[in-house]
Length: 117
Image (cartoon, rainbow, N blue to C red; front, side, top):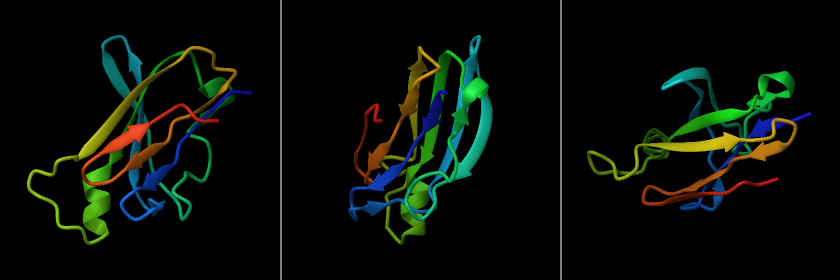
């Protein structure tokens, strides 16, 4: 059974990003349809997979991570506008029977991602 998961690591502190807001959307035609909004737990992960089983279909997806709000909540002083605000990651699911793990490693000044396991 396929599933989609994520986690966020705050590379400025070297710790999981607790309480970061995330939005998940799917591309339908030319428009993005929001599937859900959630936030990370004490381990920087979501409590459950974002999608799994029949809910995970072949297609284009987008995760939007609210990086600036997270760092402001941590007490960071950011410029206005912040260098990174809401970070969108657009990715494709070619085989919905597989596990797609899409993490974000971030600071107020940089981010990276990869397909994990």
